[in-house]
Length: 169
View 1 (cartoon, rainbow, N blue to C red):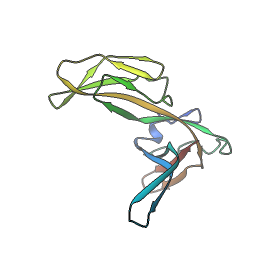
View 2: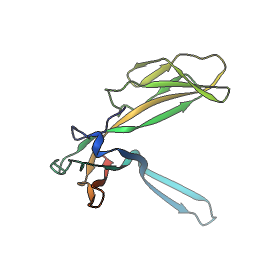
View 3: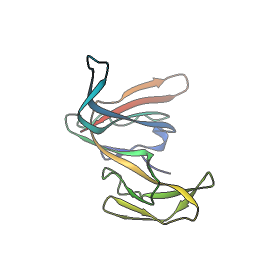
View 4: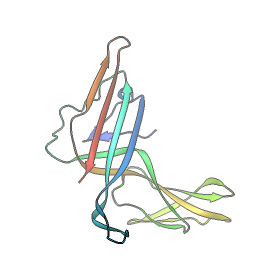
């Protein structure tokens, strides 16, 4: 089972019995219609993420005393993937070092595991006969600015829920 770590605090399973994490790409993009109706796009920067985490459990999150004036490292619980027709795949450097990159190959419409060798940010998946696509699975490790979590307590059934988000720096 993968564990969520925020600011060095491993979130207890009982604080996150039900947990979701999402990733939303963020970028600085401007689009402008020209006089002939053509659309042009200018991108100042791209490739950053906003991650949102929601959890329910019988314990609070325990994240109130983190220093929110500084970047916080979020070691993701949700995996991400890079797809390729090739078995050689570039993976993001912003990934958890405590979990290995995993490989899958698509054979006859089904994903099968395949060994991976990672050197730097390049994952080389073992070739699988009849594979039409390859997938490198990794877990992100993001340096983010964050606000303290929003927490709720249900006094009737003694449960907690909390929401947390971080914007990659």
